[in-house]
Length: 231
DNA sequence: AATATCGTCAACCGCTGCTCC
DNA sequence: CGGAGCAGCGGTTGACGATAT
Image (cartoon, rainbow, N blue to C red):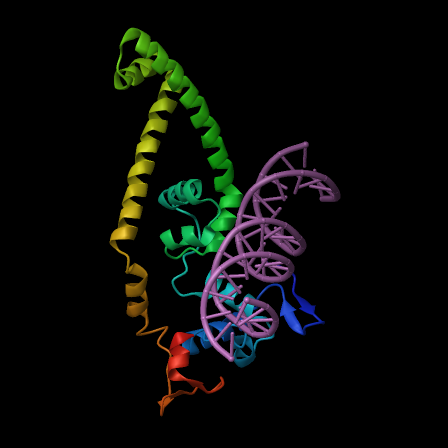
């Protein structure tokens, strides 16, 4: 899935698909020195790209913990549930799915989940209408809602019955999975921190040359150590 | 086999909010 | 307080492969 390469004459910056060589340069630089300033980074990394482009490429593609490929059922359910709650806050949703970038989640949503979501909404709407109708008839007959579900299920055709059962199971699973994932998220608030601390020994440990409180990078301007940490 | 249409996804663009001076 | 510079976010674009006609 490649975009044709192009060159922006006005800014002198390259646009379009990233080449393997560019990827290597960016990954090597960020891995070694970190992303101390995205705007300045391409200059020092030897790339004819704008900082934004580098940042996006790193976040969406080159990060070592990035997960690629098919989405699991659980991931889909988390996305759908969170989207229903907070809307198009892709970065917020991405926090709950370690290894998935906001851009990827957004693409995935527009590619497949959006349709599924609207389909489920319409189905749920129909189900709710049906349930309301059933509830009313239950009230007439003094039957509890739980009982009525079984009653109704046994009354409908086999296919509908099967579909109802599957939907019900699906709803339960969704609830469970979401509670589980959210629970983990809130009970493990330092998951990302611990991840960083575990990886910082290898990939993200920036080899600092600290001398008299100065941070000196071979390819970047001199900056104060504190300033570097803050940035 | 040729063409049209659809689906996917990397990448760009413009806006917003934050920080610093 | 306001402007400049920056990172981050979400919407959109467009190339390309897959599928349908």
